[in-house]
Image (cartoon, rainbow, N blue to C red; front, top):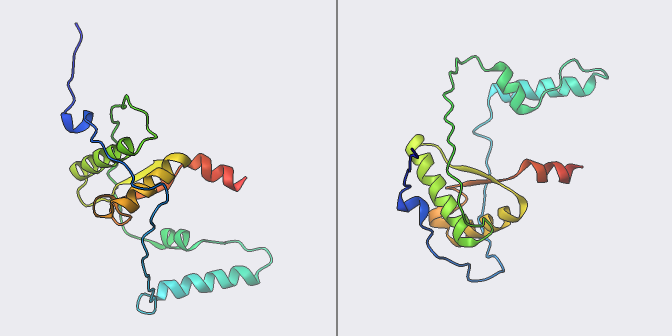
Length: 161
């Protein structure tokens, strides 16, 4: 006996769409950074630790900013990891409608499991370029403030090598 599970239409039906131009229109965003209000005593402690490491020819401790804060954080954290495996799509991934559909499905799943979290998507290099163009074309739905797109680890490692 075979169990047949029917997926909802929102998952299986891909809406047609296209990018109007191959040349992406990158949105201009003026970013003004003012860190003077955010500097704390812990920041100065990290700077002093880093300065001590620079003066010592054999430093016993050399920490990045994030490692310093992780080491000095005394809060009790009980993380609850949520992991989801989605059904594979039958269509090729390297098309605008498919990538846009994946972003829509990922956004819906993340909102269902953890409403306050921003979706994070990791893709290979060619899909990364297409996904960034989709973010720039539809900023209200998939903008850089709504979805974080990361380049896959293989391509980052290859660039380092």
